[in-house]
Image (cartoon, rainbow, N blue to C red; front, side, top):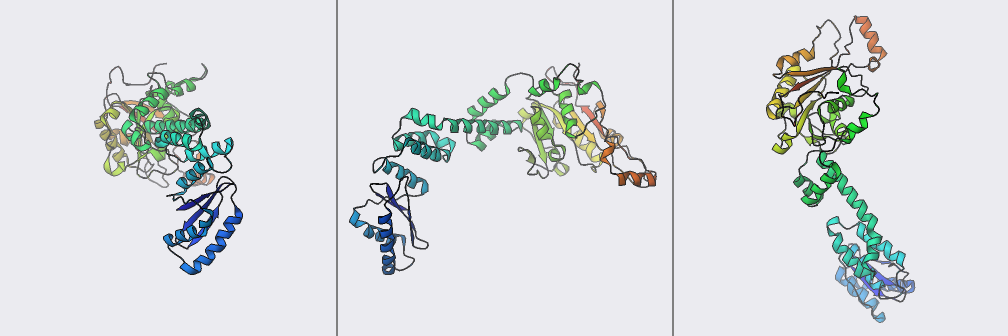
Length: 413
């Protein structure tokens, strides 16, 4: 609650705090009568003895009325600080020194920035009347705020769209209309144009596309998915299903390559891109998807923790094959397991291949770098006469022959 008194130099404001009975005297947008404020405070201290600490809000209000009655003050009751500021602006437009143009601009921007986007149209009308400025002037003052808000909204829309959120989900989450969501997606993605990432990776004529050879020398495991996207997907509307999003880094790669992703993980980390659904594929199997999303799935990318059992991986691949349409590629990254001692070598790729009931489309080799192993590990291998396995592989299956709109194999150069 606040009480305002128009003076020749501005608006005198009393903020009442019923919790401890204090009265705070503050400036409005212009200087206030400090002599009056000090006199009011002294009088209040005397009044406090009469009403007793801490005093109720009603008693304090009456005390302030008594204090300033000689000045024929008008008391304004406001609900919160925002209403208090607006009332002070209105009073300064008709009492004392007028606000300068810069003061009005500063006040308008401060109020407008704190207003939710859905309420800003009404706020502009209010500010025009409150500050007594032309609508065009106010629009120019606030133009950059609107532009920044729209740009931020568009980024949020696209972030959720890339993560396979429906238009309804995006509209509900961001508080905008479904038509706005559809228009932004159409403008940002375009209709049927090639992915910008493909153009960027094309580079010079000397660049060799990854699908030309089946041995990929990669420094970062995320390069594996980049190569697969270039090989088996062609359009920004293509969806990549990634059940181990945190381990694989699939959301970041898909965003960089302008591909949509349906990502899940048992415990999405704070560092992971937004749009990762919490889901334990180890216990529950493939996550359900809307039929419209399933229609656009072009790849399932499985990059599991190294110690995942081959038998379980084979069962998971079969489960995905039963869910997605024909022509979808299912890619699995198979990491070697290092063993110390006389244990027999287990070819994890072969063990998975025994379980999968799909035709194998390609088998890529992505060997680990020798520098990934410490000198201590190498010395231990020497002492044990043990071989360090570097053969990391990527197995790619197809769920069958797709129609003309699908992808059933690597692109031809």
